[in-house]
Length: 270
Image (cartoon, rainbow, N blue to C red):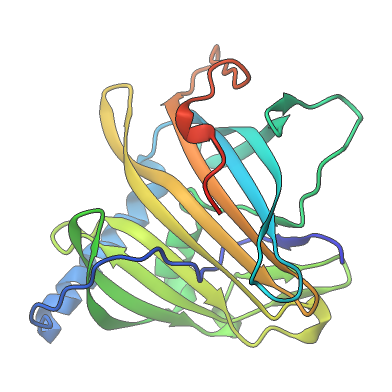
């Protein structure tokens, strides 16, 4: 089965968090929070600086049944965010520099869009997303408001493809975790619905966690971690993606990964 390309991320894998159950906010409070979230989403990408960071993707596969996961290749890329666009350059495979014109690694699942694409599309007017209150939750010690949403296929931009001939745009749903005071989004997930057989996919999903990052003395909420999960009739695949070493991008910027990889670049436990 060829690699599946996800041109807008979808989400399923949520890390365990402690739930809380204060009073459900009234309709007016829910509407205010959603208004703040829409305002935050509308300016998210335009408010980001140009930056460069390190993206480490840990690949896992489990075969037909997702019981015993096996670690695959670890891909380390330079990611440049410039004028609202993402550009990735693969630098290392399993901590070793890649050799030109020699491919010795596997990429069973490829994804993109962690830096604002999903936030923009969910909250964009054209998505006509339907939001509903879910609960309060605690994430990294912070109480967040959780809203579920759904987007119909006719308004969706979630595209799955195995090849030029095997493509499908699908409906999706998910959850948004936001600061109830500012509308800042700290986690967003989605999951595809009604996937046609032509793309040979039973399920696919992603969750993206955002954390505070200092770039040139200013704090921004940027992706810290993302998990993409894919299930087909014959295989289960999971990518665990870590973003680190953020810094300001300028014309003369450069970054080296081979010699300065920090401790968090080590493979996470399975």
